[in-house]
Image (cartoon, rainbow, N blue to C red; front, side, top):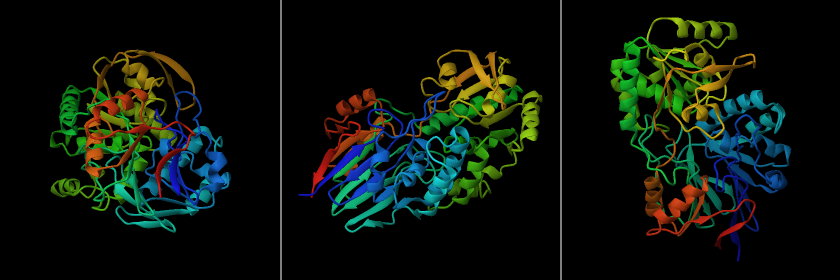
Amino acid sequence: MNDINITAYGATDYVGRSSFLLHSRDHNILLDCGLQLVPKQFSIAPKGVDNIAHKIDSVLLSHAHIDHSGYMPSLSKNGFRGNFHMTHPTKEIVYKLWLDHLKIEGRRHWSESDLDKVFRRIKTTEYNKPFKISDGITARFINAGHVLGAAQILIDWEGTLILYTADINDRITPMFDGYDVPDEEIDVLLSESTNGDRYVPERSKIDVGLRLMAKQIVDEKNKMILPSFAVGRSQEMLITLALDDDLNDVPIYMDGMINHMNMVTEHFISDKWVSKRFLEQLKDAGLHSPFDKQNLIPVPSISNRTHNSRKYISSNEEGSIIVTTSGMLEGGPVHTYLELLGSNPNNVLGFTGYQVDGTTGREIFDGNKNITLRNNYGKSKKVNLKLKVMKFPYSGHSSVDGLKELMVKTKAKDIVLMHGEKRNQDYILDFVKDVAKPRLLKEEVPTKLVSL
């Protein structure tokens, strides 16, 4: 008998440093290799991956987010000699995120040389096109509905079908119509559980509230700050606002890495990567790209001009919307805007994403208005925010009912939960007991999935 096992090196009953090794007597395949981002501290590497890097045959990356990709460049340094497989958009996005992470943390985990070695050995493919991993093993990327290029990974291991969801979203979003479900019946489902105890509202309902609030704020000549994740959420916010005719005359400023990611997004606006519904919306609006709208204004990226632009945007008398990084307010241009605009009680800070415990965003989200901001030179300043705080319950992850639906539709014989807090997983275990009996993983403990 040849057992297929899975060993987790992170993201078992928490979110962060996703890294899972599928292994048998003859093969070792790594699914993702991310870092855990810790507020106001250095990131944490997957525990134990260095020790097995030289044994890995191939690495398959689901999507570009750092908690899934951030430790990949270290693998070559530790002896990995195989190929990295991912979708075309993920390759373009992840390289920019790796460079940005290098600026933030330096060479703690890997160097520019390690990054170059990875980039030379990346193999890309489209959705739904099988590719060979090794003798007897093929894989296929399937739309995950999460961010541009994000994929579920379906592995055919000598006839055993294993589906790794990574991060999936069942909700209709500006560019996607939710995740796709493979036609085949699945033997083993490796499922995320981020929103395992949460029902996520339909996007259309949240979008209406956001647009109405934005219109009201700018009509009163005030400012709305929307801190957003550079990859995914910022593009969703901009598309939601840009395709609203009532906001055609409203200046919408785009600041930080968002502008780079918008350019990458434009390269992949086709029916290979986004929904036909979204393409029809663009066609009806007479646009090739939603970022072509004249009222969407990128903030200059040259440092001295950037500072002056932010001061101008903050001090002029026009009502405007500012979509900027970072999404959890741990740094970036949003600190400058809060310093310049935070004392006006008529301005609004709108949260559009989850705020991790310990982040500046979470402090404000929980009601603290006395916070520490950092400027471009690393200097700290205490401020007392007086602007209004609003919360829009967006999520890039499937609602708990969407996770249950996937379990039902795939007819999985065995289900393993990962990438979610313990309370979320406990809720799922109870919520799906009429259709499935998922299992949990323990870090660095091999778990048998199937015997061939």
